[in-house]
Image 1 (tube, rainbow, N blue to C red):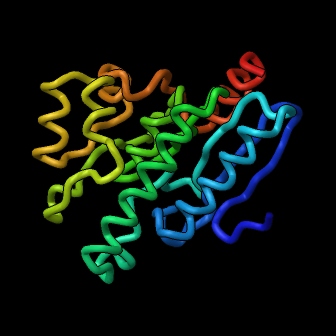
Image 2: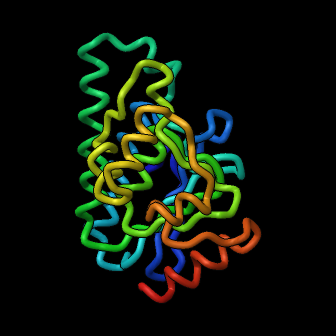
Image 3: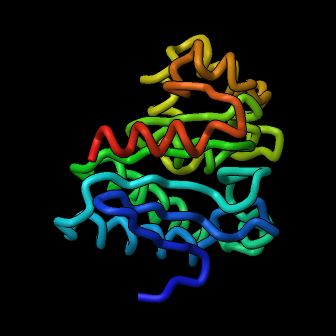
Length: 200
């Protein structure tokens, strides 16, 4: 299947899925969530795929959250459907049965951090910034992020990040368990490639 917002590329047993909306900082809209659901379902059923790397196009962001322009136009019913679709997609990644590595080169905010947290390993560059700033818009994380953050970072850090909405830098994210490793930006792809090769 041809995707509009996603690039799929295989290198041996490693499949890289790149969210390709750099002009929107790879923000999640309905179409992108649907394409991610399909792409991960394909990876689940493809025996030649043993590892998946999830990335965002460009150098600024992994995923900078939900597409606010689309979100603002939703009716309450549409907003609920969007949230449920995102929850299903992220739960599918969590239960994929194959390791998924998130490549976090810049911002992973809101739904972007929620997406990263459902991956099994999160590798970040020293320029990474992670957070749940949606509280500043009067919103709560809608894809299960509060539960995942609590399991990864503990109660105090979860309350701080959710209530204040202030992102953390890569070093703090590493301390909290949100990132497994932090490397210099120009070594990020090399590091992820080595980890993916080891897992494959």
